[in-house]
Length: 101
Length: 307
Ligand code: FES
Ligand SMILES: [Fe+2]
Image 1 (cartoon, each protein chain N blue to C red):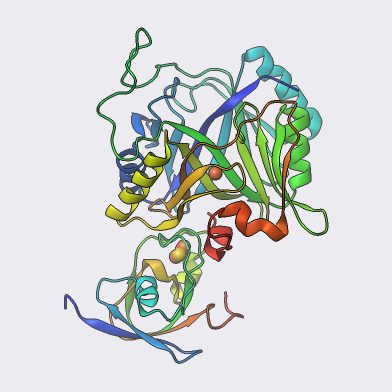
Image 2 (image 1 turned 90 degrees about the horizontal axis):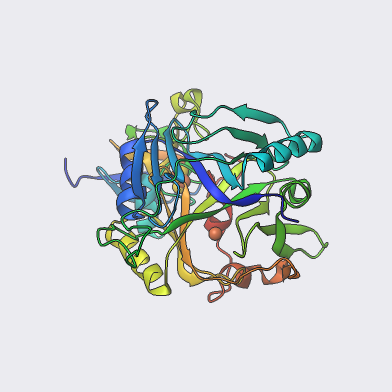
């Protein structure tokens, strides 16, 4: 599974990018050059990269509770800089969907 | 007018992973680890600082600033400042000696921008780290990373800049050294000093109160700032901006994020302040140049990523 690539699709813009197994969604978004997810601290603190996972498997690292509550986490709200894919993913981002935060 | 507040003395920073935070603040910034307390907090200092610690890391589930403390001249000054803070209407809390190991009684209070500050007069003095107080050498040989010399200032975000300016100037004896004024004559940034430094604390107007923009540490030279930026790349640490020069204060600087997303600055140089100086004013239409003196372009991440 080491360098396995997962397709990540933004449901609002229908843009997608590839994310390596073990790579964060934010890193892959930046690498794609498509600027789908806003970039802040890259370390789970500022909340700028907050997205919603609409479908697919993923795992997360430590995320500031000031930005993702336990309840939100259960609903698929994550910080993209602390989230790694386990399958292809569908996401919603405030970068392309301004109403969402 | 001088009220006995001498200098920024300490910050307590919230981190989400202590081991990662210690490797950032100690091994990369080059602060000296001086103590760990029974609640798991880690104490550090820049090598030139005379007291035992200036940075306290506390592990919890969200990053940000717990409080920023200023050291005052003596206990009489502490008592009169405490009375003045109460009269001003601050919520004042007495933190007993020893709540932070090696620190005396602290007077904790809130600011109109929703931040928590402290004053204290006593902390265990251990002297500059690695050199003697008698016939001292220029620097200790075994420093690591960026070799940060001292904790220098914080930049904080909150709404009530006017109330906070009044608190810091009238009650605590700070002076306004620099400001940014918008087209409606509203002060959107204020840099305040209690010393000859261009700033000891700074605030930016922001709808959400109590937010941290950065904690800053001093380096000796521009060459050291460049070397710090090299280390940020070598360690693959998220860079925020720089190395560059600010228009505001004219300091030379580079910013990065700690492993919990708190922004830190390492910088050198900058202007100086005497109490007879007029505040320096930057206008908001030149904000790009005020922040990034060379690129002169604003960057959304630098303005809005906060903890
Ligand atoms: S970029 Fe700051 S939380 Fe992800
Ligand atoms: Fe600064």
